Figure 1 (cartoon, one colour):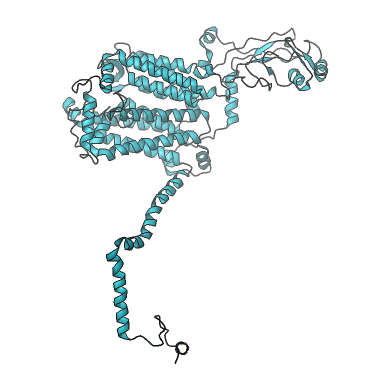
Figure 2 (cartoon, rainbow, N blue to C red):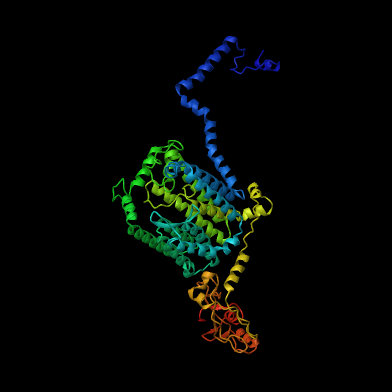
Length: 609
């Protein structure tokens, strides 16, 4: 009986070699032993082969983990309110972490000073609560409210900077007048002016924003006001806050489109002034010389920096444990304030320090993301400037704690103990969260009813979408204040608007949001402009550079003097159609388009040649 016949008859077909006979029990046992030996040989001879073959799926799974994480992050960031939720998360995490570290770093100093380990911590909690209220208020307010309050904010904070220098009003502490003492709570005006300058500078530059803005309109009055604020802060004295004010002004000018050559000149000038101010005072020069290695005095100017290095070295990778720092036992001055990053590095180690850096990197990414996605020029300028300010303060503080920069005294935002500093940073984060809700996708989602649970809890209003046409009309109304309306040929001259006082014109009325009043054009008895009359166009933030050939309005415009005053307009039209128009300063011929522009079309910029 053949194998084919056996198969047809229903006998099982052999899986081994076709020998024509079925396997016995001994053959099956021998095959099992052989298969076991062959399977054991690779594991003994080359374990790598077994591991490689068996872990191919594991390796592919491990390789897919980063892709899965990246895909999850992309899905989270693609949500309409992703930026808003990121700001809320960063504010909550950093504020909570800051309170924990302030409690740990200030307990010894508070107990030695007041007999209570929770004195400084309680003061910080009060300002955090006030900052949370300010955060909520800035989150609820509409954008137009901040623009209306920009000038009063900068004016009030500047006056406060002047009042704090007056003996009896400002509190003298450690040789400086920087604070107002209000029922035991210290308020520092130089911190409040940061928020005011960010809002006012963004409002000013956004109001004057044009494609061809002149250099003077970018610099004035922003730079003079910034210099005045820096001067008042230097008189306190407070060099670290002066540096932050310079950072704010520089960021505003950079994002407003200041030419790179002018910006580099501005930066070099600021660095030179900072070096001079650092060398004027003896304690500042000693800090700089200690950083450069010119003074080797571990108990003098370099004491803080050296103790901070010891604290970081003591922490290692994983730290000595939360609350177990040794440097805070009066070895490191200002451990709860300027050098709190050293306490973080000692108690939580390198991992804790990298966590702090990661939080600020995420905050910087979120801030620039909001600035990139917003369509309102005011929000873009304000959010980008606030992001630069917070990030710069953080990395300057970390830089001088780890020894990369000289000690400046700039605090670590939301982590260092400081009431007014915490209040202002939370206000800035509230502005960032407000701007995040005004992203186009966020506005569309909130308008269609896709409100998040947080928005429903806080009863936040629905944001209004930014409309460029509405903003342009608002700027045109702002520019038209104080300008005399143009006279129309053949009609009586319209009633002039209220004249701007001379004292406001003398000091620059653009600071007050009113354009200078132009000189009236010469008119005849009927109110028609005379031939060759020149009218001045004071549209704020607009320059006629590159627009003169196209006939667009520029700095000065020449009226349509195509015919004598009092003559019918049809004579002017016939002369324009002939291709030859004579004005008070030149002649256009051979081009009907130019004649049309001079007779009734758009006004031509320049001197008519």
